Image 1 (cartoon, helix red, strand yellow):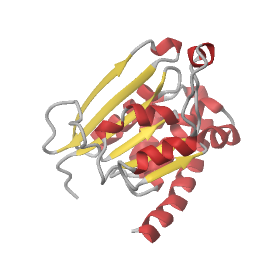
Image 2 (cartoon, helix red, strand yellow; image 1 turned 180 degrees about the horizontal axis):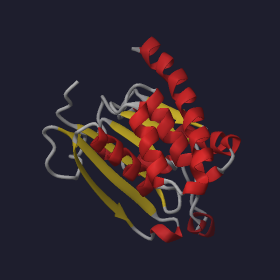
Image 3 (cartoon, rainbow, N blue to C red; image 1 turned 180 degrees about the vertical axis):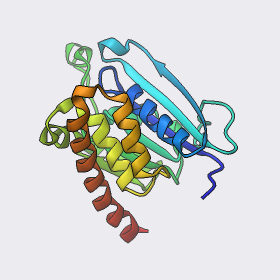
Length: 208
């Protein structure tokens, strides 16, 4: 099916593999013959600062930045980062969120409150009804390595049916962009994520 434009925003913090995930997705989209545009913004990424990567692909895509309110899918590796970037989403956006919080030390030092998962869900539910939390860290540990969390999340969005990229092209791109010594554990991580995404897919279609 010809895709005119698909907008995906991937957010998280430094060290979670946000940029690597977009590289994998971009290559998979290229394998399918799409025009692809990407961009990224990050603060002190090496110190756990916010990272956002933008992916747009399709036949009518020009600029790399996603217009506000026009993301088709938001994939968040750290739960509060989905809130930080909510203005890219609209009522039709699907959120797939790792239910893991990384609380900056400054929050504790200043005695400030940090949103919990329930508060994050309530806030985002005013933006879109399509909010899905995934225990991606534990799935990655079960697969054999916490660092495969980003690939788990790729499997989830693929299995959900909300990412218009073929599974085999994602698998090919994963082999290209992860270290050779980590290919096998990432295969397992992707499989586990795919299974989780397929269970969510049944939930999505029952809801709709």
